[in-house]
Image 1 (spheres, chains in turn blue, yellow):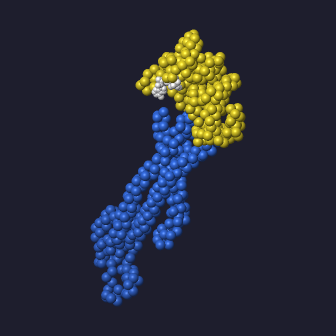
Image 2 (cartoon, chains in turn cyan, red; image 1 turned 90 degrees about the vertical axis):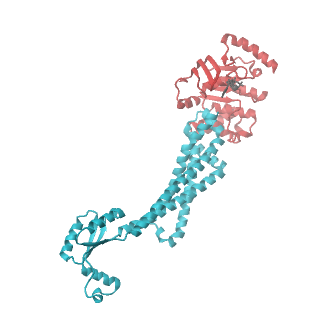
Image 3 (cartoon, each protein chain N blue to C red; image 1 turned 120 degrees about the horizontal axis):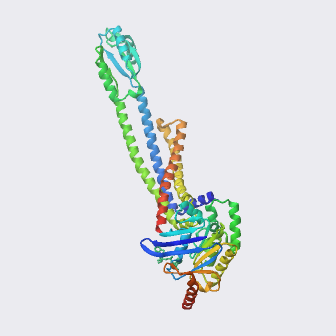
Length: 292
Length: 236
Ligand SMILES: Nc1ncnc2c1ncn2[C@@H]1O[C@H](COP(=O)(O)OP(=O)(O)OP(=O)(O)O)[C@@H](O)[C@H]1O
Ligand SMILES: [Mg+2]
């Protein structure tokens, strides 16, 4: 009977304040959608970044004069680096083969001798693939007498890293604003409902009602707004993905990620609604008490 | 038993709503509280269901004492007291049934039990046929009978009625009084504050006469009380 009472009260509240409630649900819907969209964008960027970093190759070119057995010593020296994941030795001959594969001509036919230097293709452990370490690594290796030049292409990664960082920062900024906006609107509907029920609250108090029972309908009101906003947002995302996935293959997440995404959208809605109303209901009810 | 020892009440910075009240109310009594407006009748009653706590002194209600009582205990106390007010304090947009069942819902009783108790009580106040109606559609006399039914749901040891007939016509007032008398007849204490001297003038109940935040001494209460009652009734 208690449970039924609370539910009825909750839905009475929602119905009575339906206009502000609708506005609140709409705001939660928009806010959550933007939030999740930003999250997806950062997710895609991070994935791209990860892929790029994983495939980053550092090339170490030896001086042309260095003979093969000395190259072996360089390899030993490089092996001492804990930061290196894998080293591939590319002899002059292999380099020529690669050249032929890429350009379709044998370098020996163009020039009389093989001018390509011996080199190493190095993959660093992924956590060391950042610009600071790379430049240190380059300096150290270039200091070896046998080494001519260390080469890597990092500018793309750096750019992408900057973009990702900007997106995440913007996301956090927007998140704060959106959470504040949701907070404000949910609080507003709770306030309206509490004031509309002032008399009832006083009466229940005189009849010996506990605080939880008095607060519950208002708390659930906020949770409901969050829930519906969350469901709308999740539905919107699913629909949007149907349309976008064919155009932007990057947005083609695995099914499991999808599921997590929309379930979390709904949960996030409920949690925001619940926390906001739980935090503000007591405040407004106390205001009512102190007015008597 | 209800006991007031040296109780004073100040509202905010306004002193002396009640001044040094000493009073004992025995279980099972029907007691009337009389006195001009502003004399402190409502204040005295509010102390009993601890809507306010005394600024000085102690109020003891059954096993509870205002000196050391937690908010949770106040709720328990209120569940053992029935309250009836001049303005009924019904929830107007709820049905009569829901209004009467509210105290039981608050305590989490099961639907079946609630239905049985509420219907029995509505029957006793002659409003069983109004259960589904909104409280706002009732006449004033009917509203007060609903309020009395609500006060009785939890079988309280005392019913406190603060000018229960203040808004009612003669017939409805007599109806309310006779309901309260019936409740008293079943062993429940009744404590009723009233202005309506005409209504209670032939009742045999104990009277407490208040004036200016004080209870007049018991030996003079009856006399002075009666004189004043006559005086006031004539004036009206
Ligand atoms: N909430 C309040 N704040 C300030 N003063 C109050 C408050 N309630 C009552 N008073 C004052 O306390 C005194 C006693 O008031 P109380 O309501 O107990 O009188 P009463 O005998 O019930 O009067 P009435 O017959 O008009 O109901 C009065 O002087 C009143 O003005
Ligand atoms: Mg009064």
